[in-house]
Image 1 (cartoon, rainbow, N blue to C red):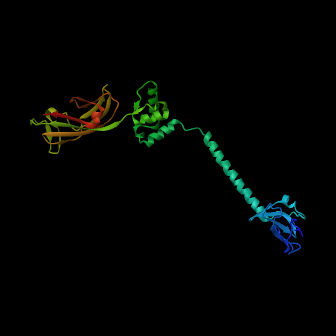
Image 2 (cartoon, one colour):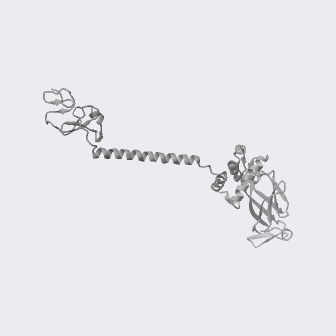
Image 3 (cartoon, rainbow, N blue to C red):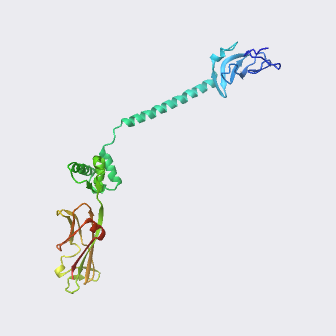
Length: 291
């Protein structure tokens, strides 16, 4: 005999290779192997194949496959299949919404105009700890633009670190050839000597200062640093002298930046002393007065 469900041959035990045993009940209801082989199982109602199918635990509807079988009956979709369909549709909707949001964010980011160079310049100054060189942000921006104007007018391609940041921000065409000038804090001493005992030093045994012919030398005596053009680069004072009536030493310091032809140091009206940047950085200033 042949299987009433799929038409395949049934063996002597009443078993179909596709549908299993077919003679246990005249009108079986439940899940059976799908005779169309389109799915793992197909639901039968009172012996009639239906549109309800399953693969593993997932249920769905297959009316096209059901119509291939005799005595086909179409059942309304089950709650589980509706729920599965709803969940699948909802998940797909969420994914589409997320993709749309990401695309919108990327599109808005691409359309957003880049920040002005002034913003990056001020941020770079802050990161380098150089904002204290300017009275305000406006002053810093004005200085940065001035640096670029000087370079465009043929000025020397060198400057302090803040100038380098200005070049990178406002006129990057000069970045490659721009030289950042080195800076140094120079230490100096000014020594008054009175080996002849002519009362050139007034001392209390710990502190001291010049006296008589050297009375212009003391804690408030100015130290001025100029370049070869006579432009003042730095100023300071000798500070408190230390020593005795034979030797009185004043210690001071000042900042300098390379790039000048020479550095002329004067202490009060006691002459001028010329140095190169390398000499100041490695040897400092040592001036002796008296005998």
